[in-house]
Length: 263
Image (cartoon, rainbow, N blue to C red; front, side):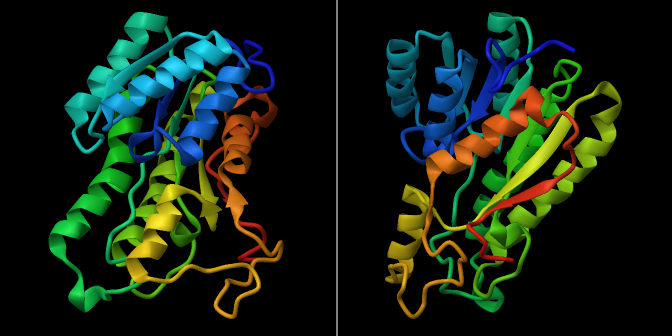
């Protein structure tokens, strides 16, 4: 097995950032991997923000970065991205599939009131997008490679008025476990991360939608043991660990990073 070091130095690592290329978990993961020398193939629906991120990473970390505009709901676009990655870098060692959107109705509407177009969009990006990424990546993933998928605490527990998001994130865990069983014989590991309350633009957008901004210590704040929201860079460190050779016996796992919310 090749030694990829602590965070995958010289790896070819596609990061599927989609809605978070300029901030949040995707940005912090890209920066952390770049700081350790990883070559990156970044995909997002927002091309201009991708270009800004590419310039930042190349300037600050002097690593090779390629970008592709991708709608992860469309397999043909995902396949173009992965083929471009192989054409440019020659191999695929690891992938972080971090695409994710939250519905505007999160916390507001139950199943009876579920808007079907919103349902299709949320499952399309979160669940079908992850499946499309896995389908393309597993065709070319190097032996002993690693894939990290983004689920959520809502992939582990139910919540009222959260049908589309929770369903998609539960599905990602199922996909992760299935993929781990299918490719384990090649030494390829597939895991899911399950963040809780992480201070990101998506969290703030979701809270804006329902007009509720939770603060540590307030009456409605969740029972998080550490008493605070997580930071995107803390999740990035978990992603990097799972991509590295420091996690070679972890596969098919759903790993909570929620500050002790569910304990």
